[in-house]
Length: 218
Image 1 (cartoon, rainbow, N blue to C red):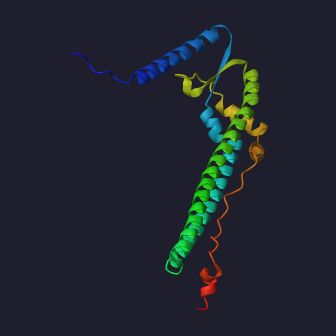
Image 2 (image 1 turned 180 degrees about the vertical axis):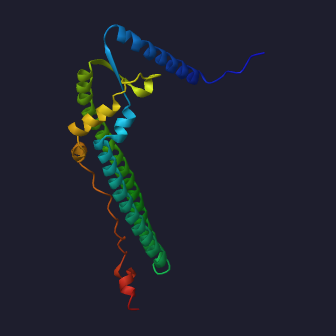
């Protein structure tokens, strides 16, 4: 009788690769030590979380996301008001005139959706590019730290099985990075922002007689 597989081929392959990587990294450290090559370990997740420049970038992103959310809320409220206005005109307009205004409104809704999607994607792309710029600022600071520590190899903390005392240089890298790339540089890392979505105006009435203002004195 055939036994059940313990997992998908992709899952088993990934586990095998991870295990092989762990063994290779574990063996690399003593080999490097024997050849006189210094080693340091860096926790890049902590660097991206705790460095002053990274914190400033997150604050800017949160602020821009709030502004976008507010712009989208205004757009939604304007569309809801326009929809209510159309509903109130249903009995006052002939069928063709009403249908024409509905088509205008539907086009406006589709345009607003595209604007909202484009704005969200542009914001995400903008801060992804800023993150790449941040990583580029880390590189020369890390290289300088390696030279000062006499290290020829820097391992990512998440990729090693254990770290000997004194080998984790994450705190030192963050301190140096805060001096070399302070929080005040955050805005300079960002590409130019895209304009926020505009609030759509009301659809034009089909005739002066159909306008609510014209009916106000009736």
